[in-house]
Amino acid sequence: FVLEQSSSFAESLLREKNLTDEQRLDLAYKKAMGRSITAAETTKLLNYIKSYETRLPATITDAAVRHEKAWTSACQVIFASNEFIYLN
Image: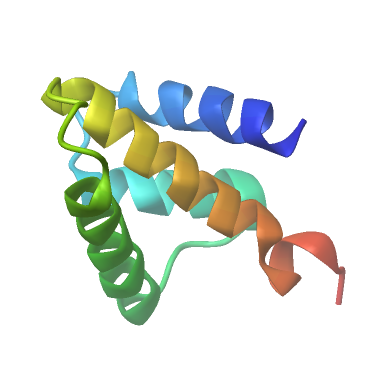
């Protein structure tokens, strides 16, 4: 279930063609957490996405597919965060 939701969330963010990856992450945080993302969180998640893409198997040659898989994983990280799960 979480993977499906992560994939749908990632697809919706990636459809925003006029946004940079930084702006997409901010939008993700606004939708999931109800606040803007911090600079430190942006850096960590951008590094995570890049690292994830490079670790995907070489058999996945389509750059768009690699990018979508990395974003799906990043969305799953957001959904698994304490801030998303627990209300203060």
